[in-house]
Amino acid sequence: LLTVDGGVHAERLPDDVEYKSIIKTKNVYLKKLLQKTIYHLPPKIISALFIRGKYDIEIAYLEGFPTQVIAARKSRAKKIAFVHCDVSTTSVLRAFYKTKEKSVEEYKKYDKVCFVSQMAKSGFEQTEGVLDNACVLHNVLDVENVIKKSQETNEIPFDAETFNIIAVGRLAEEK
Image (cartoon, rainbow, N blue to C red; front, side, top):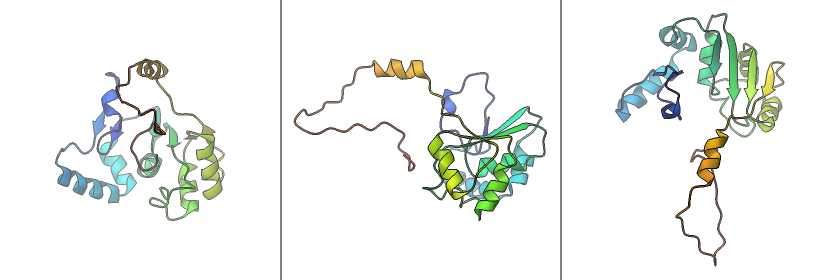
């Protein structure tokens, strides 16, 4: 597993997964400088510099830059891309592709493009176009862990006289 500057869930990876991050510094300013530099390099350069070896499958797990890097690789590996959001409601693809034709051209280089929901797939089709290599593959959940956590006691007091709302999700812009 290769990331530019750390994975969202890197600490949860099994021990047998080899994990590498291109940027290893903890210095916030240096990290930002390196991020800007790396994200402005052509995907072919990133691929050549940081992805070594031959693989059976290469997966771009996020939209945009990872998708460009894996698509740029000249390998015989099966290529899989994931789309996690409804691109009709966000400008995530326009940040990486100037036109919808360019994004569709890139995604057509993949053996499969996996959308995490039917809504994400429909949003892509609405704004970018239809892909023959598309499928819907819902995010995998650790059901046992979810059940275990649901049985934990909650120490947060709720006022029965007030209307209470609970939201579950990451604190991220798309949520």
